[in-house]
Image 1 (cartoon, rainbow, N blue to C red):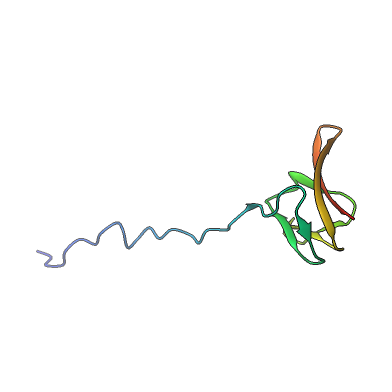
Image 2: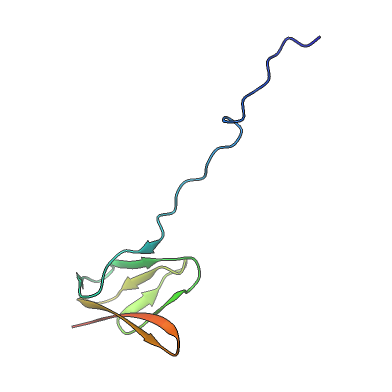
Length: 82
């Protein structure tokens, strides 16, 4: 007869770290170069003028300016302009 008690489930199922995805700035907000605008999985929001796409589909500003969200051809875009 075994004398070891059964292990609990809480130790077996660890939760993964949160990834903090989503839009990080709002329209009309001033940003500088290198500022993260959106963290996303896949290109749900596309890069417009003054915005580049990172390796993990993160959108970031490449110049100083004001953030603008718009929609073109049924796709959401984000751009940074003066």
